Image (cartoon, rainbow, N blue to C red):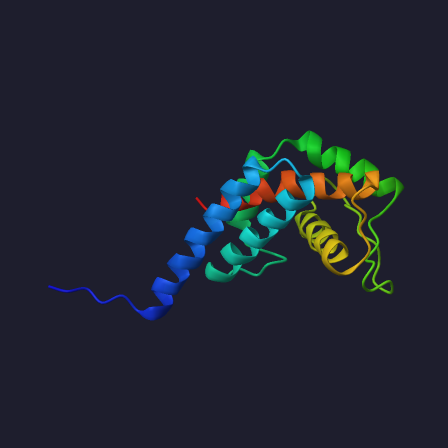
Length: 151
């Protein structure tokens, strides 16, 4: 008996395979900006293929992330954003990103999105320490999100 796979299924598997390769390459990457880009692109593919709402995800994935992540990372990020929230350089009319609490998953995802938008469209500098810090936190968080989605 021959099993026929539909075209979407096969295409999704190709995208997932590629996303896994990008994610693994990102884990090995030394340049924090390239690492962030590889992780973010992998994240986008997993979200699209899994048909998740990118900026909310679901409670199951949220719980997995909070079970895996080192809360010192989130606490440190919250302290930094409390002092100096992340501004959206692409749309300055939007409020800056802060975390209301360490379990503020929506704003954690918002931090990743705004960091990505600033890097791709705004004004991030490779030599600016704050920008390195933003993508570094983004990488640490994205790694756990991707691992949670990909299980």
